[in-house]
Image (cartoon, rainbow, N blue to C red; front, side, top):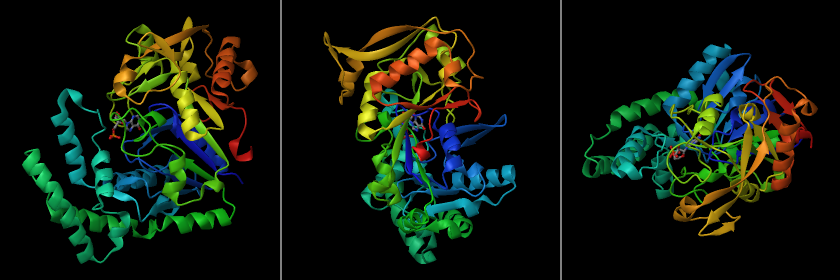
Length: 432
Ligand code: IMP
């Protein structure tokens, strides 16, 4: 069986949750490899909506193993709440489907408080983070005083000592720099002990577990969160998230060699959105932007914030094809474009009087870029019930063929609505 990495090609919110859910049918194991509960997957199954932030959406299918890799940052309260919710919804004891990396770092109360305090201090220059403590948790990891899931299994006095050392640092920052109340060690310690009792059996050393799945011939789906342009290295720094969102990180986080990946799929929304601050060359502040926001339901799953909307950006997408080594793409939300007289696509950026085709590293340069737009005739038909590619309106097929040609890779599926069933599957990457 093949192993597939699936990542977002834009600024997140491409509709990865639904695609992951679909592809999970062919995978035995689903691995979440970076980010934390800043992500949000909305799944619609038989008309019911589910929002998950941390647990891979594959959990909805009985028998599938869901792995949280070492590159993920875990807020224990969110994890336990999701386990509880899923237990209620499914009537199953879903913890038996979960495998948690002992090397994944924890998000504590102090990380959340620092995230919010820093955003307040930045004022109008804020990043627009989700306020979930993601950045500070990765900071603790890199500074090498973070707490990991495996620490929950350590003798109590060891855990207490590690926690105290971390909170001592955080409380100094909170009190002396941000003028905030300190976080009480004993309260956090109590929460950690409670979590340890519930999660203990699911905490494992992931590379060995992964080697076992590979040995057994299980098909593995690696599920990215956020998107390529929010990547800490190659995204629109500093308006990015604090992890590596690229396909290459799937292997690093899971402790699996790269030779085991057979196909890399990028999820491409048929237009572009962004939440939070930062440059966005294709942004539309007009009726079309509003059409996309309303028709596409472009409001954050995690924070409820309205998303900024714009046309499809081929400069950014070609960059994503290159950074991730994409083999194919899944085109989502094509139905949202129905009803527009004209559809535009950004083919290049105009910067200082010349046209460039690369994605600049400097946000000042990117902010100065004007999109060079080409126009397509739209289609008026409702396509949300179309199941065959050939039944799409001719202008919709022309749009897809154009994107395929410009990106140099084929669309493996086209999504025309939020439900599992509203999908045109062109080929199955697990059988490619
Ligand atoms: P953080 O990840 O909470 O630190 O937020 C950093 C930036 O990434 C902000 O602009 C967020 O809006 C954005 N971001 C984080 N997670 C997501 C996501 O899942 N979808 C879209 N944007 C996200």
